[in-house]
Image 1 (cartoon, one colour):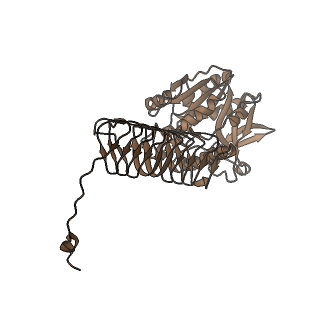
Image 2 (cartoon, one colour):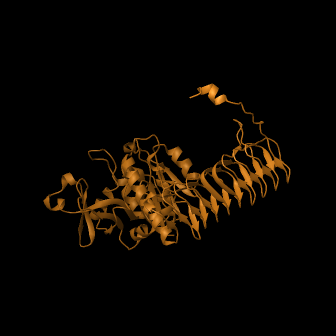
Image 3 (spheres, helix red, strand yellow):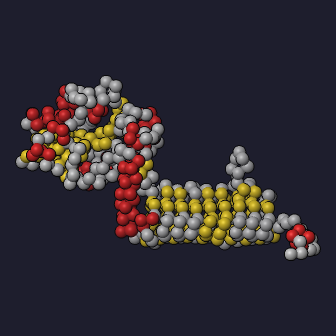
Length: 430
């Protein structure tokens, strides 16, 4: 790989109205900065992330997921602005691509288009029907000759619909020459990266415009932008999965994390939510069910089922209003209204309605182990830690608080008593 990438992620993001750094707000399961890093890693082995606001927090998040990322701290007090962010940045390769950390919709194909050719600078531009408020990019004979802020445009320039998308691929030697020359002699007293275009034009360098889509180069600056970006990302994810063979009923009602993976014949009904790095293999997830960071294989869940992180379901049926957490179920049926947490259940076992694994004592979590061919009757409480061996029947309404041996019936019930004519004594003869 012969290109370096610098991702600008130093901004405060005040329009997000949030204590969280802007670039850590998630889109389809990943912080938006991670989407930019993923795209960068497809074309480069030299990636620098420029930080300032909450720099340590962002760095820790990035380092928890990625290796070999270089970090640079912007001296924003003395050198504010996008040009200031590049001061002191040194890259390894002969060409450097400068990205923004708040552009999560960028793709490898667009980055490759931006880095191709032999111009001294490739500059991303967008054609807008209404360019009001944007600086205009003036192009002549196929090259950028000027960027003019709207307030400085003459009448002809105001008719230009080409605007700057903010991404540049620059010869590294040129970048190292121009960045130290930037000044902040402007109304905002900031150092602007766009000024390198003027320097290059003055030096007779070639600045090639690369036309990109507004959707893909959309920056996220507010919670409204975040929601729009999420919608676009979800459309991309679901389109790719359906083309790969996943069946979706009313896909616009379904949410799928970008880390989720699918194999074989999978079907998702309306209202389904797939979160985290869930993996589905020949799975049918019925309406309004939630799957979180779990493996679902040759199984069906729902409607209105929930499988929480760390679970593995194989050849299993999970029905409506059943919740499974951090459990391994192989060949199990749990038709309705049950909670199965920190459990391991063997093939052929049936979990009745209202069954609860009592896995938490207020301080610690404990495990429930259920063998093969176990019938757990309705309204049973399994007080962990407990082990139920193979071929056991547990009567409805039983509280199991000790291990159960193979082949037995476990039953604990208070004897039923009746009081004759109590109804009439309580309510009267009427």
